[in-house]
Image (cartoon, rainbow, N blue to C red):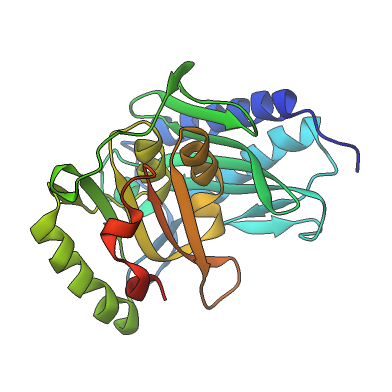
Length: 259
């Protein structure tokens, strides 16, 4: 496959993210149809509809590029380029009426993100970046925070609900809650990463997370001067991760949590 012009890919991803966000916003106060409900997660018909729209818009410009999405896969996942899509990141928040959810779209080249877009339709904020460029929020360049003391830091954490994950995570939550300025558990990995990239959060830690949750946000963080650190986790497209402003990861002492 020919090299994809990143400026074109970024523009198409922004268009797709805005279109999906418009659907999210339009259906905000309407009844939601649940496709499946697990103990700690919900899948909506709207997730599927938003991903289908995103795929249609992306394919209109890049018909040969496959899509790896939370709501399904199309094409060859070993291809040189692939889109990685989470149509509604924070579905449980969205379903329960909490306006903290976003559209996340990344383009990967050889399984490394080269374009990242995260759109929050409730605040009308869109974070964008591409390889070698800055991270922007609504067009304005943003950077990670400069805070280097845990006592000044606001840290987000997320939890997989398995017994093993909780057994390992809760002691770290307890330790960090005593040391950090504040702990936040917000329910949208994409937005937590966007918040780290723009200095609203100083770090975000998750022991088990999927690629489509972090593919766009990881590039946002790195291009904003931060650090995105991962370890492989059991399961396909699963990772343990820590994103921070480049000054806190070693002070967080999370090695045993991520393993």
